Image (cartoon, rainbow over all chains, first blue to last red; front, side, top):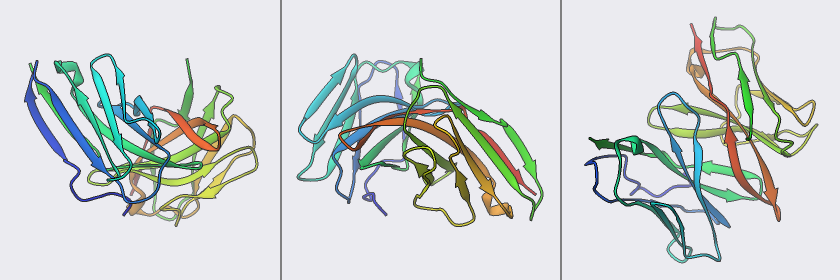
Length: 109
Length: 115
């Protein structure tokens, strides 16, 4: 597998809490992407972070990338019930984009 | 707005039958992808293409063929469908920057049931 074993599978939190999801990868990548998939829809990209960036922010989202430990994280501050979804990280190597198994986040109103 | 359209949305097929899933994109992207999504496995890459006429094997290509006749269209073909191919299939398009794949835009998926 391209992925480490510590990727969290499911998380349930209260609205307003902050949350961090992690992923680790085994193979070389120049880009890590984070996607969100809501029920019945295709995934949609949230953040793309390159190997020369350590952190990237977009609104309530913050992604980090540590190429030395081959790991990335996605943090959401002040979660909303509408953040309920599956969150995937994806690595990129040339034209291939490989997704992790995803974290199911359930935000309770 | 990027647009990737998959057809059909739902499909029921019989074991041993031929199934073709179609994907059309209006983004003028070079790269197109087929993934399947199953509980516990996330999204797994079946085939991809980096331009018209090209198809490449992804991580789980066995039992699937792909065809990219034009920039806009990318098909996934199951010549002899089996129940293990029951899944939700997603098509995506994306561009490349410096040889590295960038943002993918996904269709809404095709739910395939093989009886």
